[in-house]
Image 1 (cartoon, one colour):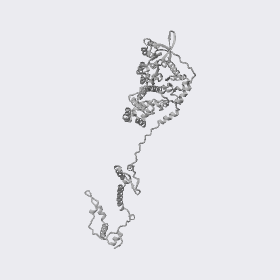
Image 2 (spheres, rainbow, N blue to C red; image 1 turned 60 degrees about the vertical axis):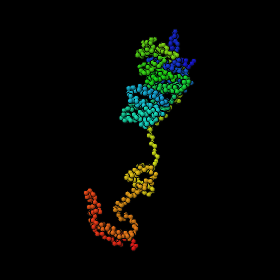
Image 3 (cartoon, rainbow, N blue to C red; image 1 turned 180 degrees about the vertical axis):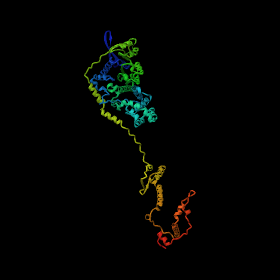
Length: 597
């Protein structure tokens, strides 16, 4: 039988008093199948029968089960030859968590799809607390993380709280709009404004990231499985999202992310040539209670998925669970519609689909396993007819359930301790990268901080105390003549000269306080005969002046201010006294001159 002609059976109908089994062709399944009905009417059994036949026929499929019972039941129907084709994804398996990173390897032109999908599910989960500002910041956070390698959803809160991590992400950005937001808007938020804007996001996202069950799944940068490979190689992906074991919020988030990622994997098939695409296998996606995962982006999936051979079979309980946008997409895109017993409100809506054959009253009075449907046959929707769903299919072989679970844990899971250690390491603070050291130049001599108590030896001889005054002069001189400072010797001579001048002044001022025992005796050259008379007169004058009894009084009076000016000693000291000469022998003795005459 041609693959396109392969039939998946799910019901039986009366024909001339006989029960005739019927189903849907593979080609017609590309138009999608929609199932609605109250709890316990037979929806899950119909989905199970179709999925079991896909498994037995070697098809590739994914089954998202928010109850858990169907996923576990399907494990019983895995034949031995397909054990290694199965990935059993059970988030509640805490010892061997399977990683799933929705942000991994998203192409630039697909990032907005992931962002929109995540924003839609967040908006749905946090409907009561959603705001425009919250959406604006969160959307830019997700878009920024999608550009960074190995980013995960754990990065959302860290980017809002950790400046160093945020800096690293922003530096990597290529999208000008997103980068502008983080630099020109968020970067200029005051602390008060940021404290008001970000906690709402951190609180909501923290509900997922603080849960070890979710954190160990979404916090690993590398996903354990490649959805495109699963689709192309016809693998079996069974996703057990039991709300009782995982939590409703976690189920909604994981389910929505998985559907988005499956859709992106299907869209990536557009990259191959038409000839290759023709030979790609169909992949069947079953979603029970799909309203839990249906968001605004789900409408796009329904309208576009068939182009990439992704065939949906979706089921739920009542129409009001869907938003108006999703409802329009469902009724506008599905080819096969199956209705079990529904409530009065839903019956009024569905009556438009089945009239005039069936009316609302018929829809609310259906028995268990009874259904009305419009079946897609060779690309054309049939007239409405009644049927009964098939009973559960009996297993044809012994169960390999435990082997399937063991294989999945070993090949797709990681030990919990290893996962938590990696996440702990990721949370470690980022050390700011040290600034590059400037190359050493001769100006470093001038720029080095100087302490007043330090001394430095220049040329191995002179010890110069670095006083505050000299430091300023040295810094000023060095900064203005940086190019000429080839070595320290270039700057020392003028500095040394000034220092020596200061030291000389200091010595002269202190010599008056030194005792005679500390005066350094110096040898003087013998004065010439021509100068001897002048020396006598000079010394006699000094001695005569020093012997004046009123010298101190005269000097004090000389320091008095007259009209704001200080009079000098020379203008006041009486110079009229007679000058006396000193005998030559005394002069020679004082000058330490030998008698050579």
